[in-house]
Length: 114
Image 1: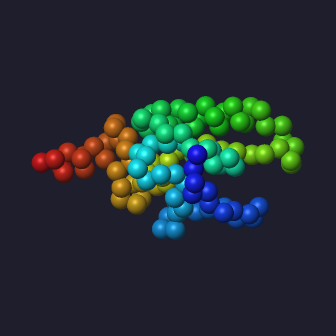
Image 2: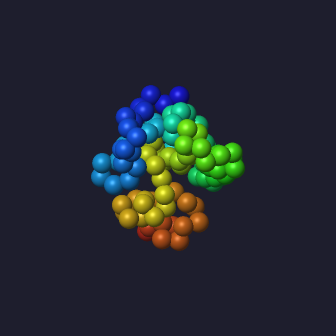
């Protein structure tokens, strides 16, 4: 269970990206899935498994959402080292996105080895 639940109100959300982004998980977990609303955190061994789990949860949540204003809405977010992850966000920040087949990150990794 995540112990770093961000405080939010109905009109505010934690910053997921950018310089003031909120730590949602654990920095020592390379990949995890975080469920908004419940704060549940599930460690995953790879980006592929984290993305597949998040996609499956989001599709299931969408399929069961009835549109009623009192129905809770929750999302599954992929986390990398505790922070919300997207490939484009990592690239804009100058970080390795973590995908093994990313051409631009692979070139940087190769250059670092040489």
